[in-house]
Image (cartoon, rainbow over all chains, first blue to last red; front, side, top):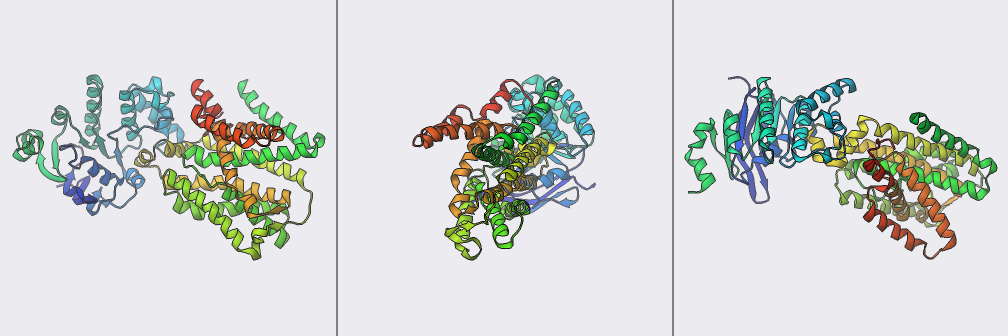
Length: 235
Length: 307
């Protein structure tokens, strides 16, 4: 088996008396799209935050590209090649759309500008490049956040609810973009509540409940898993 | 064309100010020197707080540190005041390095309060080490009338702070500082080393007040703890920046000039209502125009960041 892009080993994170992530292990391989689902409060976003260094894990290891990254600061992890978007949009509102992209790379300005222009065209925001990001519509901000994350050309992409609040047309563009990234060898892990999106896009799905991984497998298998149905609908 | 005007206007003003001491009265030179000092202080506060959003409530600490470093070198070691002023700036930067490292980890109001505390601690320390600082009795400097040369050096410092602000705001370094203000979590997730950037901005913001403190000490010939560490000075520089426009190049300059002149006029005519009017102005700025004059123009007319 090839070395995984991301190898999470028995990760645990507590907040006071609550164990938000309880000994979760995941392996992600290159060039695949993974889904992470579970009821509210099952630990999905906390897991994201532990991977990206926003939260310090209490126990366990996170190995990215063969290198331990747990304990590193968020920017160090980002610099190593993990990109993410947020559940609640976090663009830089008083920077222009173009500046939102330019600010995240250390490439030479000309090269950065070229890449930023290409990415803005890719999501059809090139006409709004000088607009403050805060003045863009919700969907446009979501796209901007998505391409901003691509400016560093990450190898692992974490998407926190990419479909939430996005209309059908925009969503299809976004999903198509994710598939293209996968075809270029990127690994994608997404948290999503929209089951249609998860089932249509992901090749492997992990299910969390109360901080524990209760199932893992192809979407079709997951849908019929007893424990998954129980977690979502109760006994 | 407009580019030439944008460059020619400040140069013309600078030349006029350079010639001003020849024709001006002693009071007028002193008043203009004060405006220069406020431009240095407000412009420096803008570098850390206007750009990164980390509100420093104790920025006068750097002014006081520079004042004491400069005054001690001049009075105890016999240094020339210009060299002492530069070392005063260096001392303030050193202080910023020592306290910035732990304090910049604090967020929002905690950082503001920590800075406020720092200022009080410094004032207490200066009062305590009487042998070096003269304690509560203050420190007298040898008599020297150097107001006009100090006018020029303070003016140059004000120009330097403003040019530095322009260079930062037009660079990607400046944009990265702004991402800290906009959304620090997102900035870190995008690979921006926010701790290092905040520290750099903090160091840069300490140099000007340190130099201005040492120059002021020399000009006034006498300093004491309450005269160089007053909270009111921090508040005044904050209000100047908020009034003019935080995060802009000319906002601190505009705020310093307008508020200083307004204060002088009001101060002279109505000494008792002065604090009241100043307080009312603070409330009005915060409530009605949190972006400041230039910030409002910038947003409404889509002006570039470089105003």
